[in-house]
Each structure stands twice: as structure tokens, then as C-alpha cells.
Amino acid sequence: MTDALERGAETLAPEAHGPEALDLERLRSWLEAHVAGFRGPVRAEKFAGGQSNPTYRLDAESGTYVLRRKPAGTLLKSAHAVDREYRVMRALEGTDVPVAAPLALCEDESVIGSMFYVMSFRKGRVFWDPALPELSPEERGAVYDEMNRVLAALHSLDPQALGLGDFGKPGSYFARQVSRWSRQYRDSETETLADMDALIAWVEENVPEDDGRVALVHGDYRIDNLIFAPDAPRVIALVDWELATLGHPHSDLAYQCMQWRLPHEGGLRGLAGLDRAALGIPGEEAYVARYCERRGLSGIDHWTFCLAFSFFRIAAILQGVKKRALDGTGSNPEQGLKMGPLIPVIARTALDLIADDGR
Image (tube, rainbow, N blue to C red; front, side):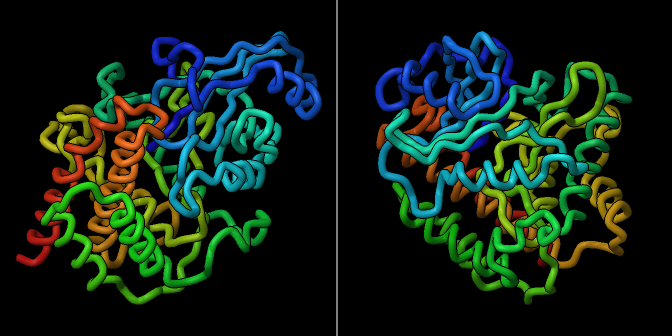
């Protein structure tokens, strides 16, 4: 599902075998020809985290790099587009949205068996628990404000000026996304879930009219896709751009705000049930208000739909992860199978949100 670059040494697995193994000699030759200053030999370790595009740390004589590739096996249409990730990261270099420097894209599948790209390694902190137990209340507030700043900065960029005017279809973002993820969910469905059927029906029936807002959206904007500086609440890289496109900016905001409504236990790492004020973490309303202030907005229309859509979409994504794990093509099959029980929890949370809004 997500892949942050700096996971820490304890999360690195030994070099992959089978379909995800790397031919290090062929890779070294390609890197020396296409990455400025690269010198082998190469040692590769696959990051244990991540369910979508397999990601590896490369250690070479010339330094440390990160390689991200398409997974093996039969893939869903339009999924795992590492070339799109590479393109958007190149476009964002030098903006107020920090990214790891993209170094080279390889579209020749004969090198390692699939398309891949290489980027710089950003050493910093990745926070897996949104409650930030390792920080003080003041530090937690600063981290959340920095997340808010980067998101507002991303949505304030002009896609045309970035050369990304054709990075997605204009208009009707929510309608297209509902259609896409409903189809993706059905294509990877492994069992009938009544709550998912009800949620899909609700979002299909409640898509708001297009309001003309278009921005570059990340698609998976959450705390563990941000790398923070080792010694400051400053983002040094926003990673995992697989789902990036031109879309409605409020989809990113709602997607992150799911965190406030999901339980803190059971693998979902949400903030529900925690004393956020005591922790120094802003509430959802305050977080949204700060985003609106930064973007000059008076508020967010159709907020319940935006949230319900986000729950529906992540459930569809997790269903794809589960299906790839069952098929043996997932980047981390064991972890992928653990995603299955989360899907009905997410669907029920969304339906409860919709019911509360209707009261």
C-alpha cells in the first residue's frame, strides 16, 4: 500500500529471492551508464514495509540510493505506474514540496525484469504511529502543523506551470475515482462484504457536482509517507507517489483526516479514542481550519462525502493488497494477508460516519 524510503535498518529484509530478486551485475552496469557518478559494486536490501511497488535500498561505493520497481505477476490496469511516480517527482524538484531526487528511470524490463527508477536516499525519521509516542506534546503539534503546511503547499502548486497539465483528466474527479475504485474492488473481490456493498452504493449515489477545483494530489497523504529531518519537525521528503494525479484537493485532506476517525489498535494506527488535546495533537476540525487558512478557503464543502469516499477508496486498495497476497504476487504477502480483516472495519466506520451525518 505505501512505501516510505527511510524505514530504518530494522525494517530491511535480506535481498529478495524469486520474482523480486535483483540481478545485481546487470543492475550495476545499467546504473553506471545512467546515474551520474555511480560506482559499484552494489548491495541491495528490500524494504520490508510496503505492499505496492517493491522498494530496495542500494549501497554502492558511490553512496546509498533507493530503487523502486513494478511488482511481478499480473497487475491491475493502470496500477504500479512507477514511470508516473518518477515524472511527478522530477516536476516537484525545487518547489515547496520536498521529494527525494529522482536520478534515472529504466523502462527496459530486461535489466531486472520490470520497469524501475532510482532516487536519492533521504535519511531521516518516519513516524509509524500517528500518536507520536516518542515526542513531546510541543513536538507533536509542530509535526502535525508541518504535515498541514506541506499538504497546503502541494495543492497550491500550478500543475500547468510544473509541466503536469496532462497528468490526469480534467474535471469530475470524484465521479471518475468512484468508478475506478469500484471496478478495482470488484476485480479483486475475494468474498462478499455487505458493508462494502452498501458503502459503494452510497458513494455512487452521492457524488457531488464538480466544482472545478483541480490540483496535483498525492493520493496517499499520511504521516508515514513523510520523512522528517532527524532533528527538527521539518519534512525532507514526501514519498510514495504511485497514486498521484490531477484531482480534487479535498480528497487528499479527507484521506489524511481518516486518521482521526480510525481506531488506534488493530493495525489501523488511527487517533480515535486518544486524548488528542493532552497529546498536543490538533483535532480534525482545527487541522482542517488551518489548512483552509493556508489556502484562503472559507470551509470544505461535502465533507462527509469526502471522508466516506476516502474510506471506500482505502478499502478498495487494501482489497487489492489482499488479493495480490493470496495470489502470491504481493511485495510482502505475509503482511498483505493481515490487511484483509481491516477492510470490514473501514467499511463499517464509513457507514457509521454517514449515519451520524444523517441524524
